[in-house]
Length: 301
Image 1: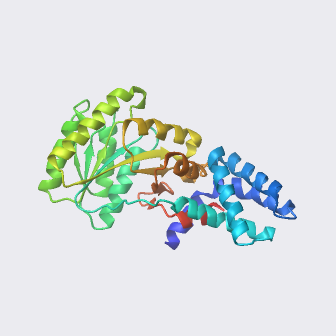
Image 2: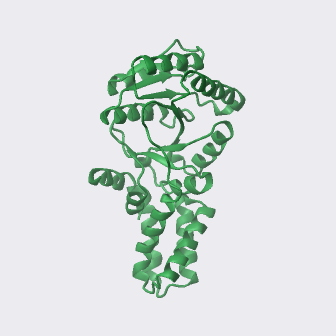
Image 3: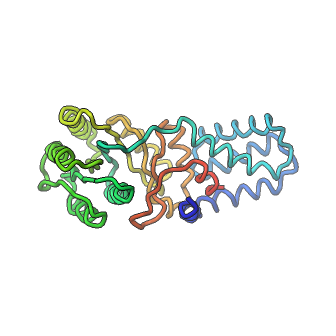
């Protein structure tokens, strides 16, 4: 956990500098806890890619906390805000348990780190003692299959693949046969991210779900969406679009180490009501971690 916290702290450095620098300035000038202070803190959050509605909600929770706990010293406001953010991110929680047999459909537009995230998930699950199979069902993107095969070798797990341009549902069908035949625990499916052609994508995902339900009804199915942390509020818009074509169970947020827009994690939680399940805190194969609300709040402020 300590190692994860250090990675998280490092990966959120740009975001933290962005938020904390402005916050320290506001708190340093404040003499009392009043409405002006709350408004200025709200502006700090809005300007840090947390989004207007989410920032308002967090500041309202801060107001309540300060009133209930009778906090009167400005020096205690930052600590209170940290607690509010941790509680906010933990609200609702998520029931994401990977037990045999589990099928995880991973989606996301090109360039967000989808295939890389699948490779890192495979490595993570294997390190936990699970037998993992990858399904190369993003059959229309050039080199997607080869890219996934490289990650399968790096993580030392099996892969089921067909030729480029083949039917993604047929790949998943064969992968389900392998999941059962090889007594594996987890099947990770790389699915297409052609969001510009929503009708095709919806049909494809529905067909894949039907095959899983028919061929392996006892399997737990999750759909995870990969979002790029550097895209800020655009990540929220992407997720809203994917929600229209798929039932999403969780978010994998990547590239947090390269952005000052890490505050978008809070927007995703509030706007989409989808939990952030994993976060990418670096480029190494072991740099995908379970999301921890308390550690996140601690590293953010």
